[in-house]
Length: 194
Image 1 (cartoon, rainbow, N blue to C red):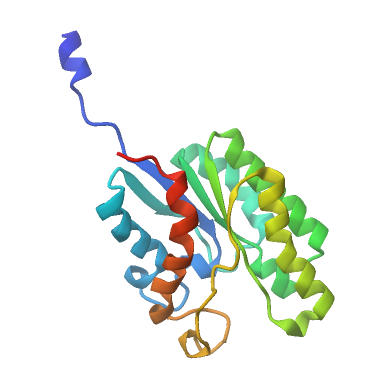
Image 2: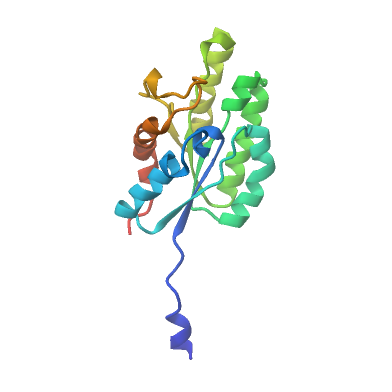
């Protein structure tokens, strides 16, 4: 009887939780085209033991992320959290100390649950003022250094203007493979080899 119990179903795949806003939720494009879905397809070839769960919500702020993170960690028990929040804080002009406090909280909750964290850096348009824009961009390297987590400096790096939707904020389907190329080099070291 004990032998039967030991030969039960294979261990569930390790989970990678994408915890972000519309930039990761695939706003305005087909779900299959989103970078999160492309990540799952890519990992099937290289790290088939991982399952990607996308818990991103369009319009989400870091404050909303703080309210959701504990439940999300308990529900999905991820090995890795890809944290992509802050863009909506920046676009709303949220005080940077609030955004920083919220990102701190989310990273701490993820690490408390023994998850590795990959932080995706965001930049906002220059029309928010040079000082705010510069300090906003600097927030992500600061958080990565403080918490010793991997960082993608700017998740939308290398995406040309014509690969944005009409709002000039959200990348279109053609841009999604580039986002994945930006993410993978910093994510791969966090994944165990099967």
